Image (tube, rainbow, N blue to C red):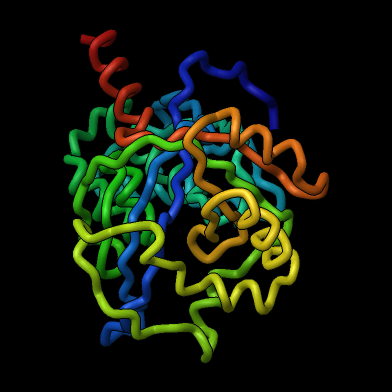
Length: 290
């Protein structure tokens, strides 16, 4: 493939943390019913888009081991194209910073950024709610990134209550092992009967991640790293793993612990945010094009 010149406009695709994850049961289709608190953070990937008139969607940046047809970015663009009836196409670049399969929302966030950006660039005029509905078919976390607010979520991810949280610093650590979400949710010994809570009653110390024990039992690398982090700060697994996070009051504290982590893991220090940089960038682009 001939590489085209990369566009100058890059759209943010932030990461998220599940500050807790309770599994409350399953619906009639077998989907797990969850309660979780999504904390957006100020690190992530970036995507760039070049609109074309030929209706063809092309990924200029391939992901190793992922066919274009299976890539959530491609799927999101195709969904929007079909839903809106747009005859336009696009070339898409990805600046990948987040680890794949880490549970911090990289693929879901990429899909959401694609929906939001192309909705603006193709002028398809779908509402955020309509984009979130499209996103839900791609993954339970996509609507959170489309709406762009730190939020409490329930059900299969479709019931969203935006909220404001304090902005601590997080040390996010990827142990360089991949946890299969499908494997964890299919496990017989997964906790599926956690009592529901009211989001206003959330306290970190009184919540947990119902997938954490199962993952730690099956992936010793995750368990060992979590034990190390707990020596320094409140720590937990996010999503179905494998990423872990620790909560700190200052960036200096987070950086200090980052320096003593094993060399065979990836670590990031990030600040919690309440509004996605994707929405801030969208507003900026709309102002400059007005």
